[in-house]
Each structure stands twice: as C-alpha cells, then as structure tokens.
Image (cartoon, rainbow, N blue to C red; front, side, top):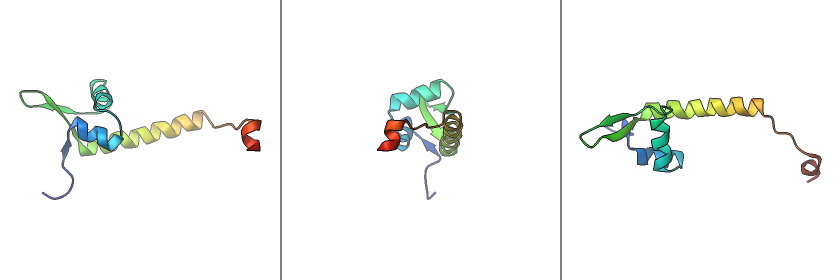
Length: 80
C-alpha cells in the first residue's frame, strides 16, 4: 500500500504540526483532534484525514480571528 500511512502516532502528528507530543496529546484529550486508542497499552493513533481536517479547521479559525482582530499599524510602525 504505497503513499502516506492511514494512521499516525502522536509523535508523527507532533512532527507534522511542529509542536510537542504533549501538546498533541492535550488536543486529543480535549477532543479537538479526533483519535483512537488501540492495543493493550492504549496507544493513540490519529487518522491522516482527521489531521488534515483539523489543519483546515485551524486555518478557518485563524482567518476568523484575523478578520475580527485586524492589524493596525501605529504611527511609529508606519514610519519605519
């Protein structure tokens, strides 16, 4: 089965998002990033498509934030 794997470890997700595994675990535990717990030791896995959906959702939230909080230059910044 060529291509990207269907499921990623939390460490894999952390690498994609350039953040820590602890931050990814927190996203999963808060329900912000869908994941499944598998095996006897309860290892977490995130589906690649769920990660892509999460990323798109974050882009949408960021766009809304920027629209609600426009960047306003101060006079000192405008003179630079």
